[in-house]
Length: 294
Image 1: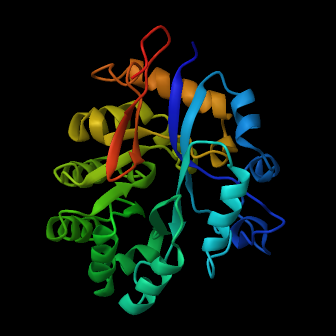
Image 2: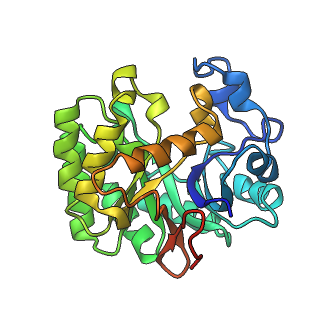
């Protein structure tokens, strides 16, 4: 039996119906292998090129239509029909609370489990806006996840998110892409602080977006995350198709297995875990070949 995974960070693109200004506009991202990354693909095709069984996935918003993000959810319902999936959509986290409430109401869809609003670089300051507290409180009241994508070593912003999580104990916060490390010592400080929050989880993914030096330190980063968050609050994720900057889907998951084997605990290879949303956060246990499914 092949190893079963739930991939909690996947993107699918429809360049005909969707906008994706960052990907196909006048100034697309300068990534290697961009044509491969942009190529349309189905879950069945993705499964065909992988030695792992994709038991489920979480689709992360990708700029399909940020003015009307419900359109992406409708397209996904067609594109992923028959597959086990949930979706993270888009809403502007620092918009006026009335506008934010309207945006969340407009996103009503059975696949929706949360939102992401990328706040990398200078955009991270938006997380300090006074409106964010009320907007995150709304997400918490609706049991919707907030996926935070920013540089954790921006310690002032990290502390602001810590404050939100402490003030809103029912908020479910997920840190994307390992907190985008660059300065290892500052990043470690931020990670150790976030890990003290029981309502914070983290994805180990996105290293293809980082410097070559950080890519070479993936094992060290994983060991630190696992040590502080524990295996119940860490998720391997592919970031497909963006991972194809330097690795195929199969190579990304094979690397995850190798990193886990080299970790301080060695437990993740036997118990790959992901967060799955069904009446709250539900842990799904992934098992290795030869082990019984649960």
